[in-house]
Length: 168
Ligand SMILES: [Zn+2]
Image (cartoon, rainbow, N blue to C red; front, side, top):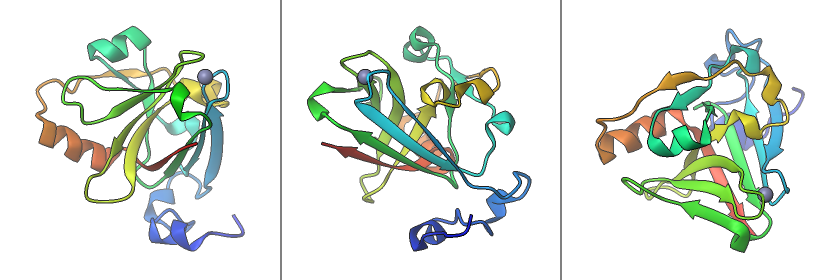
């Protein structure tokens, strides 16, 4: 990459970030979204899809959607919604995250956890929502049962991707 924004440097995702070691040091910009285009994502990560292990959460919601979630704590995810009225921010359980589903085409794109202490949030992205979905490995099961709300929030802060959700 020839240019790195100051914001990227502050977020630690520049080309010299230790996170880039072992991934070839190349920040990629992966794009995708829901099927009809109302929800768009731009995912910046130095983790090559081929080296990323998607997670198949075993909660009832994720089982019904057959999810394959990816995240990069050193990456960056921008979620842009054209028409906020056509975005479902579904919540359940601890209600600590919004499950972003397009009301028009029905695609579950990402789970977003706004951080009450900060303007930014954290998100986990469905690999199937990306244009490069075919490059990802098959998801491996992951179970988070037994976590209380505080432990769940802490895990998400550590493992999910710093994210912004912009709704029109
Ligand atoms: Zn849609």
